[in-house]
Image (cartoon, rainbow, N blue to C red; front, side, top):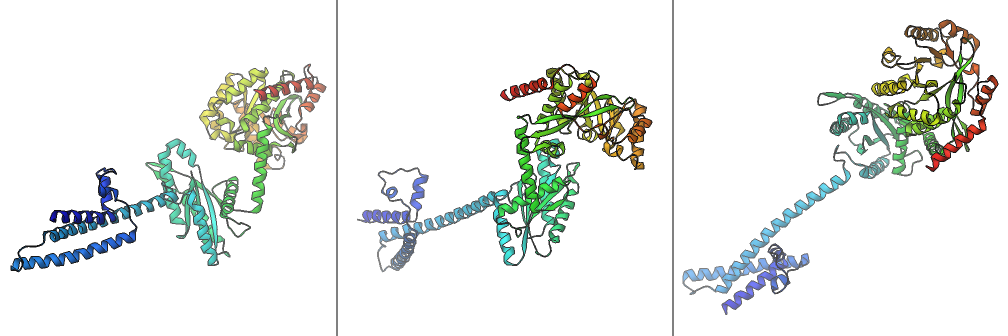
Length: 574
């Protein structure tokens, strides 16, 4: 009978423990499966209210059993009762075990809840935070900026969003590795925290681009100006990584939501547009958004799209500016200039499309396509006439540039000895060793090399010693003003004297009248070009001029144009 009672009590306590979720845990740990074990079959998760009731019943049962068994034990020791009820003792012991089990499970659950909460907090932190700089990431910046802007509006204040981009970061990343770049970004983030107001929202949007939202009084936007200036000054200080001091600058675009801005996305986009304007203005500065900037950017994007489609459509054509032998007055050759004959925009000067082509990386294909057309034309000129072509500074970054030019010579049949490649002085400082390699390869093929716009860059004599130039070209800004400006005259005289000392012939650009011709001849300048000799000529106009002088070989312009069109069609089909 006692065994039967003990068994029923045991099952009862297992049932109570099951309500508390304990037996389920034991079954899982012991890898028990459903089947014959009733305790496992009933092991299910119960509603919290029922669990609370079971806990209350367990405690109540402990009080009742403890009182009964305790009284029996006292009576047993006093001799009033012969022995205690073993079933009650067993029930009390099981009740104590159950209470200990509850206590242990409660501690375990408490620890699990703490771990879960910590993990949840950590996950939320990682979801909105940049792991490198510990700033907000792009995902969180919109929400945080919206919240700060709303709070500012309630207090009658305004919020400004700054888009900050580091100038020169890519070079550090490329030269010293990503570890150095990461350390630099962390230092930049620390300096930004120390500079902006404490209530500001700081974020890393990606790469070397950061976002800042700060509150200011609407009547005093100069407060934002001061913060932007402080940021630029703080980030311009050298950053030491290891034993090397690195220098970067910052460009900042700023926008505020009150000026016809109906969303945070538009606010951030306008700050990005202002950032583009700041970079365009020379970098290392800041710029507020203005409505005209958006129109300008749309125009530029439209121009970029048209350029991208115009290259394969062969809308870019060569124009030719005459180069004259100043001593004899005879035609010595032409300088090739780029023009865009757009079916929509009309004739477009290079000042409009060349900068966009350089920024977008399209300048290489554009330039080579025009040079090809010029070579196909020039090979039918009188053999004494030369062809000068300009190379963009962006093209000088291409280590295969020399091979591409030589390939054009082979494909068009134009003699290398009649080609003169002009390189601007300022482009040499970006990578002098690569420029030396390119110039050396071109010289080995018999191509002449000219230093263009001499005097407008660093005017370093080291360039003339390091690179074997065949000609120096004086920039038109000095030549056109040399009769009225003594400084310009002195510069032109110094350059022509330098050329004579180095036995390097001089070409003067920007000749606009006969008095300039006489002055340049007296200084020893051998070749010149400018509007005094006529404006740049189209292919047909150049051929007409040459035909009139008897300098055009027997070939009709229409046939030449047909050959160019045929080659263009073959290139498009390929």
